[in-house]
Amino acid sequence: MAASRLPPATLTLKQFMRRQQVLLLYRRILQAIRQVPNDSDRKYLKDWAREEFKRNKGATEEDTIRMMITQGNMQLKELEKTLALAKS
Image 1 (cartoon, rainbow, N blue to C red):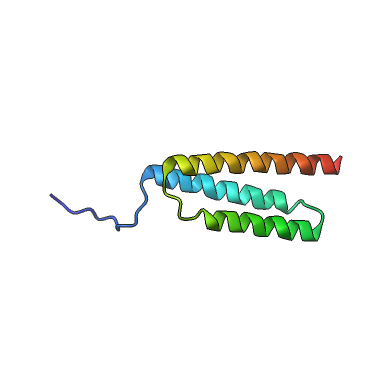
Image 2 (cartoon, one colour; image 1 turned 60 degrees about the vertical axis):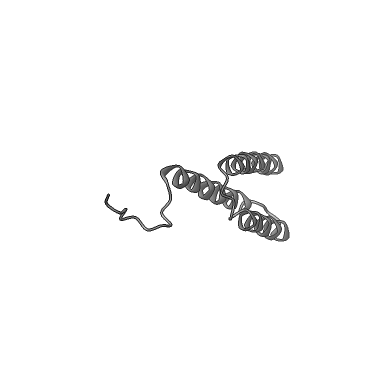
């Protein structure tokens, strides 16, 4: 039987897709935070987002990761709604 040519740390397709979802969520959160008008609030939110993603970086269980992505999307929507209300 031939040995795999892939390095041992290679992601499966499912892991790769989840990783892409997480990175997209992180970028969207940072883009929304850039619209916060107050500098101290913007810094607080940016530090909060960075810390949350770092804290959960080691998560490997599929259901847990899916749940965190869902929660992150809900928090992003709340932030976007709040920013929209503040602009109007």
